[in-house]
Image 1 (cartoon, rainbow, N blue to C red):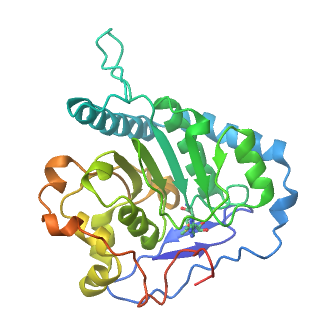
Image 2: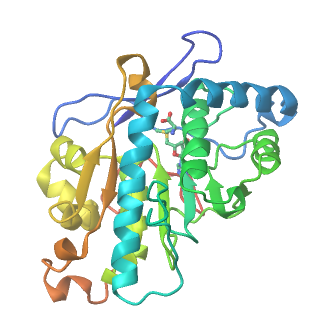
Length: 302
Ligand SMILES: C[S@@+](CC[C@H](N)C(=O)[O-])C[C@H]1O[C@@H](n2cnc3c(N)ncnc32)[C@H](O)[C@@H]1O
């Protein structure tokens, strides 16, 4: 689904959606080595942070960023209303009753998987800049934003810690439980990462607290052979019909960075439509039929 693009201008290396017809085998494969020594271990942390800050400053004034912010705030406030209506007292919100614009829920967390190497890849750097702006907009403390990617070098982890984010040390393979309202930021990630995330939160109570900013599930379904989608990505395939997707705008000069991205939520009215049997003892995904899993697993590279 993704192909690596290299060398547009020195640091412009990244991942691109490899447009292929439904069912065509990807010609390229995600290749990540977590054991090879990484030159970014000797990263100039000050310079990388300064470059990131510059990117944030530029992005802040982009019209499309304002639209991303609005869509995300709307989704967050929707979750807030639902939780309050259902007596969830752990969250508190600014509903704009004091004349200010409606604000996001309190006590939200954010989890970012699959950002990529933001010191060498301009795509990942823009995505990180967008993440920082969205945290700000939602008033989520940076320390409540958990990030993990097996490609992060130790230098990159230093930068992430320095800017206040919490770097996870374990590869959870996307299997992270949302026991409080959580935004998952998974930009251009392998389908297994989304599928694992859904499996770990496969109950109505958790799903209704989640917002995913990531690849459109509908587009994934469209690009994958039905039989394989249902067999290998059972949780994405079941939820696609009932989740709510709102595509995020992407200017033409940023196609590689922000294309094919949606705010995905799981409104109670939708998840209630799935049969009760769906929720019983959901089996952990195994991917035994997948030759090209697109993610790095805990114990081995697949
Ligand atoms: C296609 S690349 C996308 C990178 C970047 N977000 C972009 O759009 O260019 C997928 C990313 O997922 C990361 N990844 C793979 N397995 C992962 C895992 N188990 N947990 C978190 N990230 C993972 C890869 O290292 C890679 O950086």
